[in-house]
Amino acid sequence: MERNGWAADVYPLPPLLHNRPERIAAAVEEAVDELVGRYDRIAIAYADCGTYGALDEVCDRRGLQRLPGLHCYDLYAGPDRITQLLEEEPGTYLLTDFLVRSFERSVIQELGLDRFPELRDVYFANYTRVVWLTGSPDPALRLLADQAAAVLSLPLTIADTRLDRLGQALAGLLAGGRR
Image 1 (cartoon, one colour):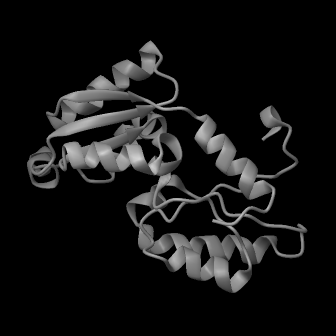
Image 2 (cartoon, helix red, strand yellow):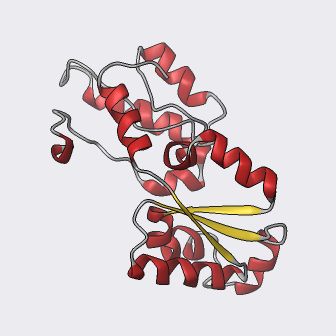
């Protein structure tokens, strides 16, 4: 937040909640309960992220705003581009820079592929490609993205994204914009 000159404190929730999105709304509400009274304003830096409206219900009930979109992919590439990618090839598995960096922990270990590699063919049987939505395609991340695609036995497509979408969404959220 300092990089943009924003006066905001960030209270991150465990990123692995994205593997269990039904737990996100409760975790957000618990964090809000801990922060109420300490701040004049609280905003939620989550898109819906698979909560199917449960996060919106918490935000509506508590008078909070959250980031726009169905998921973080909308914030990186834009909802129209995500729709296009998925319509072009419905079997698209999306990766962000974060997922590329944490693939071993958030995918391999969490899905048990390190212990039961045969599950890869069960989990990923209907996927036909990996699309890496990158805002910083440096060589080290490229290597990790290649490795992730290789683990899944899928071809890798790289889609440059502009992180300005995320920055604009965060600026709107901090300014009190609606979702």
